[in-house]
Length: 260
Image 1: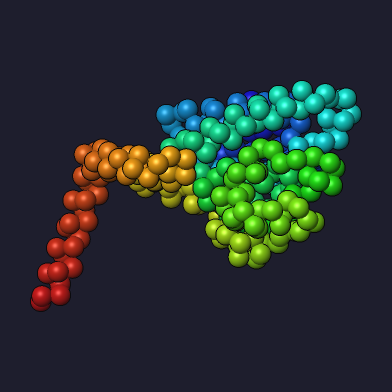
Image 2: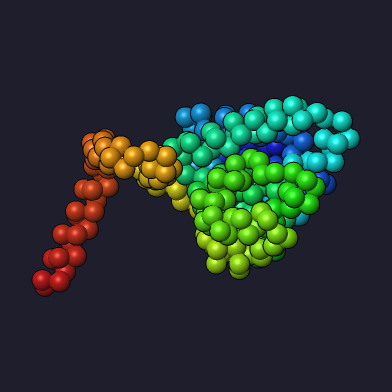
């Protein structure tokens, strides 16, 4: 694994950490490949039951490292290939049947918004600042921002963020529905969320996530058919049978207690 991205797995929880703190975790060519590889490794591993996305240092992710690209005299075609590489990683995260949480703190800018929103649940630090800033340098959205941001906050608010110098603090990002909760220590809280998922019915949670994403791009009838097949398969699993039996026993105990 590259020095710019770390991937560790413990107790079923994969931690994918952007580690370029001196650059606010802005993603250059090398980091883009490392991010893709880490995302693919995490989503393909049989030992992973939940994923945390994190950024080392004072910021979560400042998007693409435009200064590095300019310094390397990158061509437009090279930037396109880099975006496609990172898209492969984001697509693997969004398309996986694994629950994913982001720990977002400090600056989240440009493509960093797409990385953050590749998760299903976002825990924000109180110092969160979300901004697009693409147009400030004459660029356009990438890393899934045009779709993931719209899914999260709606078309009008997505355009407000992309077409202006709007900066969202943690409270406003929460009000917009971009983040699920605010924490004093977002990395610790995000890990606790992922650990609870990993110790619980993570397969059912992952399938719920998959169904929601799939439902956005297909006819309703196809989603209904998928839901029916998926809940049937879940019901037949040993995990569900054990949990249903425990639920039934607890229900009988509550009923007996009320009758006494």
